[in-house]
Amino acid sequence: MGLECKDMDNLALKVTEIPGRPELLRPQASAQKLNVAGYCRVSTDDEEQLSSYAAQIAHYTETINDNPDWKLVKVFADEGRTGTSTKKRKHFNDMMAMCRKGKIDLILTKSISRFARNTLDSIAYVRKLKAMGVGVKFERESIDTLNMSNEMVFTMLAAFAQAESESISENVRWGKRHAMRQGNVPFQYKRILGYEKGEDGKPIIEPDQAITVKRVFASYLAGQSIPQIKAELEAEGIPAASGKPNWSYSSLHYMLRNEKYIGDALLQKTYVVDCISKKVIKNRGEVAQFYVENHHPAIIPKDVFHRVQEEIARRSAKRRVSDRALTEKGKYSGKYALSELMVCGDCGTRYRRCTWARGGKKRIVWRCINRLENGTSHCKTSPTIDEAPLHDALLRAMNQVFDVRDEMIADLGETLQTVTMGGVSSFDRLTAQQDLADLERTAANILALTKGTDKLENLFDDTLIKVYDQRTELLRQLKEDGERRSKSSARSARLEALVASLREAPTRLDSYSEAYTRDLIEEVRVIDGESIEVVFKGGVGVVVGLVAR
Image: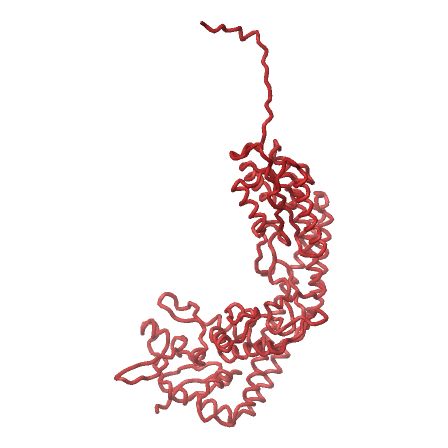
């Protein structure tokens, strides 16, 4: 029996739409209840936000349980986490993991800004969830991502949410800058040993911890290295700022460089590039800084602090000789004072302490590192110096200075007065800082006035350029004045310390002293195998002979 074929030309075209069911995108999906989760987040930890946080959890729990077609999986809630990135939101990431395992069909959330204020994050996660058959319902915007035919509306709304985040971030930055101008200093007590919060909320000195701080500064000036200080503190069981028995090298460096120990505070040492990446970089002058003086009680005298900064710079500039580069930087070692002071009169390289063992006998000598590592082709005439006669020569040189200490102290006093007077400048730092603040306010007002208006932007372009040029010049002057003050203070502190050491020193020394070598001597220059020049701090030089024992 054959099939009868009708004339297709006489039939009207008819198309019937069969509605789709987005929830069936998931292969495991069935006609059972949808597995629904709620997601909420608050950005801060204050009491008002925490009540909102609890209210959101209750809202989603009730909403999901009241729908007969839904089954509550869980209400995920991040408390006090950033909305501009999902990396730090633990519960958000846990929710995504459950979606990947097929345990969630639908997510309810308040708004795009609660989900993610980063446009790229919002779109990327919605697309991932949509591909897994998981929908997201944004209540405020009335958007259901599974039923959304076009991403344009969602993209625009997400962009608005990101703009809102950037606006909030800028307001926060403005508030912080205003607080800085008022001299408000944030104090991280967990990182700063020696201080605790007083009853009035301001920092006060914690006596026991302050002893440790003073010890660290004194040890560093006495010539000890960071590893040596670390080892001593740990051996004696002295806890760090964190309360732990182990000290890190970075915490000791942080302590020695921290101006808060002299009662001051430098604000905005770092800044956040933008509210999306949250990248923090060191401020090298890109944004304004604020130096607050006499904010809280000092643990370390300013002269001691300046001497430590100078010593840090000196050790950082220390050079060693190597086969590859004669100017490569090397590590500082505080074991022997002469390792930092003794230099070759031929090539200018430092000397190193060595142990020779010949014929079963040990001999301690000092040798030029350049000649030791690279041979006579780099340093032809530097002699090897035995340690015993070297110490005798230094002892005689120091006793010669002690014999004329009164005259030397008087000369140093005159030099100190000259240095102090040289540190005085006609530059008015306070006025410059006030002018800088005025310029920044002017620039901010111009930018706010011209935002989104091309005509006004063109009108104020020249004015804004002049404001920024003046700001740049003021920042340069402030930096130069700060460097000049710092150098003057460091030199004054060094001279004062030298005078104090001379006054406290005994009439004569009976034996060589590492401590007085560090305190009094600037450099020991090897002239030849028979003599050295000992240059004392302050510029006095004494030539002494090396007499073999």
